[in-house]
Length: 320
Image (cartoon, rainbow, N blue to C red; front, top):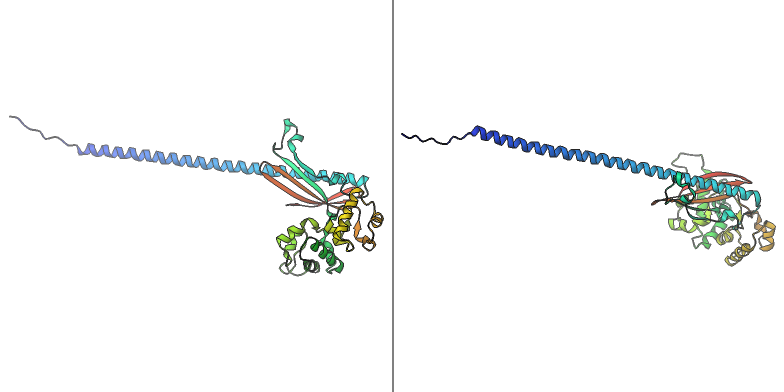
């Protein structure tokens, strides 16, 4: 007698295999997630490290530029001291007036101890601050000298700007002097220390400032105009007897021979006797412009140096 046997189905074994496969899949997914997380963390740490390295490099480069410019200022002071020893006048033929063209700094650094980037360059110039119209003269102890307003009006006209701005500027500067140290900070007018401060005066715009910037300055005290270095607009402003053509002729004349004193100036430029007390042939204040470029970055500073005899003093340094 034959007997038939039906196939046995092991449901328990099949469930175990499916569970094992699922566990393996979960393990693979977890491994991928952990790998991705690890890569993300490592990438983040690497990026942060790169940022820190770049930040340190930028700080080091910034410090290098500051030290280079500080050295340039010291060099400018040395030039001015030497000039003060041997010259009683200041004119545009003297060594201090020769600008420094763009110079690669690695040419002056020992290759074995090179600390400056090969692409670093330095340029700059020393300028006579008393060749400009001194805006400090527009007000004295809170009062507005009419003669100075008239002089500033002539300067603005020579520069094709609105001459009425002279009175507005003078009154604002005088107000700042009258209110100095009085009232609350909110009520105290702005102190005028640099040309951009004129933007606080109604009518002065960035375009006006750009037009007059190279012809005006705020100095710590009232100063005479150096006739050996001043420009045509500055001469016309200070000397009402001069026309533009007269001022241009004066500048051409001094190229041949600088004025040695005010008597020499009076002899060679008739009709200015009444204005001699506002003029000079020597300078006490100098502007130093320095530019240093390193890789793709550039820093430019402006400094004011006061010279008394052979002594020099750095009054301020501004990044521009």
